[in-house]
Amino acid sequence: MSQLPPVAAGAPRPLDPPFVLPPTVELREGIVIAEPDGQPLEVQLFLPRRRSGAPRPGIVWVHGGGWRNKAMEGRVLWRQAAHLAALGYPGVNITYRLAPTYQFPAQLEDVQAGVRWTRTHAEELGIDPERIGTVGESAGGHLAALLATTDAPVEGASSRVQALVAIYGVFDFLGLKNERSTGAREGLLGGDPGQAVEGTPLWERARAASPLYQADAQTPPTLLLHGTADEIVPLDQSVRFQKRLRELGVRAELIPGEGGGHGHIHRPPFYGPSLEQMTAFLVETLGD
Image 1 (cartoon, one colour):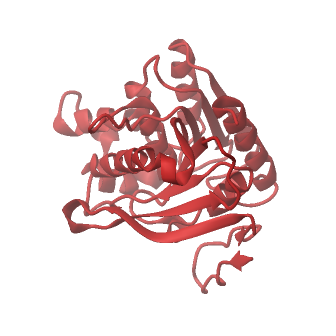
Image 2 (cartoon, rainbow, N blue to C red):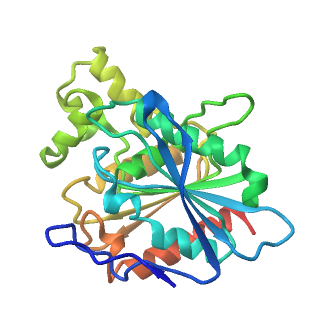
Image 3 (tube, helix red, strand yellow):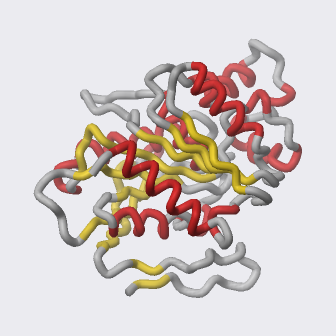
């Protein structure tokens, strides 16, 4: 079994339980899928060692980090990706260019490229290109939601997904007033959208970056996980996004983590239940 090295002093709290690669899963690292503006975009693959004859649904995993960092060096969802791969669902953990050097929509363009790459390589990965879900947490939850609410096809390859699990993501920048995340928003959008005047370039950029306003009836089934005590991204972001999706006739479930803060899914008592919840949702939505 492969296990991550110990976390250095002063680093973020370690994940609990730690990442351990199941023996039934192959991890491939260092695969560069594109180099926008000379910046390499790497993916890591979580592949079942034993494949059935028929292609399986695939999962695209999107890390958080306030759009400015790679949470846990981009490994923040590796445990969940390995778990789903052990059940037969190949996973692609994607990366994107970081703010403030690169502002929106660079991040969206990069994760869309990740989904298109997954589709065009579906046969070799054992993935059904018509059944791709995405899971993202924090900034990754925001970007995953945009993968569910937008599409940027290239040469016939769509970037839209067929299932969404978004974990304490930002879905409405114009309605987010929390001062604790002001710096992250400014880095992504080039200013504080909460202070933007309607119709200005910043206001338009914030609206385009908000899944709440991009959602339509084609948005796939959605599961939202959010801690009730989140002080970085308030629970109201998920409540309002669920309401909007249901208004559009989209299946949208919200599971609050009672007393959980930002990052609640990474440690007990929320880790196990959240893993079970997202697994059940993805299996039900995407099929075998």
